[in-house]
Length: 148
Image (cartoon, rainbow, N blue to C red):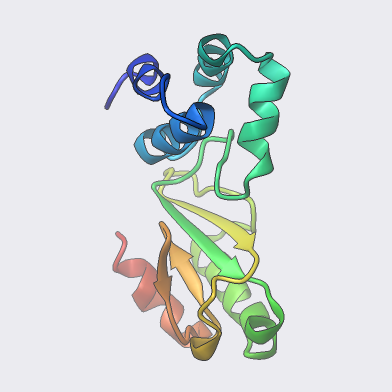
């Protein structure tokens, strides 16, 4: 695993460097660690509060430790009408956690998100940003077992 200081410094000269650094940190750690937030604030010359504000403004970024597999359920109207509520309940039941939580083994985190842009194949979830189309409660075990 790359050192967070090296990741941040590699973005130092880039336009929008702090956002680039946060995306790179997220790619490496699956979240932005507190120490990395403090370091980014120092490197980019902003307050820790401003760095935190940037990191929490974008729904894709997280300052909370998350699972290896981040399951995001689209909660837009087309997915909702197509049965997203039943799918999210099936995911919660299968993993024995609720939205916003991470499994005890650190493998899965469930989050809600806005439109994924795949309304032709609803309901849609993403697993680590990869879309899974036409999800039904019955498909949930097979989909999640493929991650194990």
